[in-house]
Length: 191
Image (cartoon, rainbow, N blue to C red; front, side, top):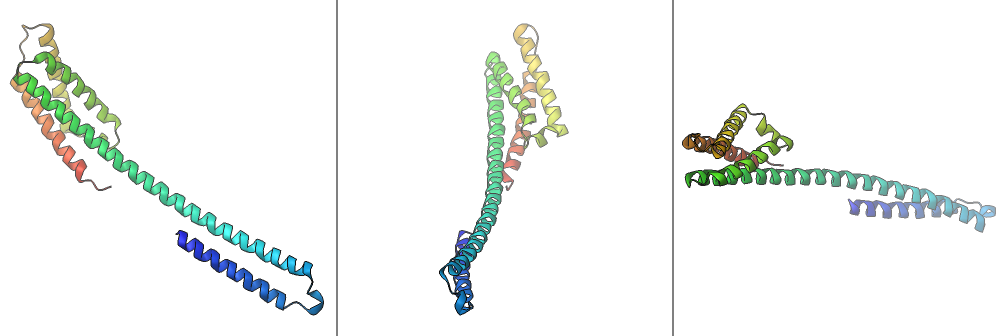
């Protein structure tokens, strides 16, 4: 684009010089005065200057448009990477919760479920992850997760309350599988 502007600027300058020479050659003998020469040179120079300015404005507008498109594309790529990172983080947290449950560390599992709950809620506010949250299967998995979170909380408050940890782990595994599939889908999107 810059090369085109430079080339067109050179053409305009050459055209202006040619126009000045032709106009001066067409002068009658009594019109060949320094003020007339200055007038012709100034007028043609001004017209050429306006044409060059117009070319630069058009080129600048095109450059700004291309830049805006590239910025938008880059932002979409960054958002995609952030979305992938958020889902990966949720999957990792889910796995940690399952490990804590298997090792009988219910307090730690409960703390991590609160973190996972926060992550799942944040998915509602990310434009790319919003499509995840409107899925019925996902919504049911989140409902099951919330029930399991309440069960863990009740168990910690009242230790006599029994929790089916195998069911909690199974629900977490289903959520993990769904999130992994969604993560893979995000990775394959071409932006």
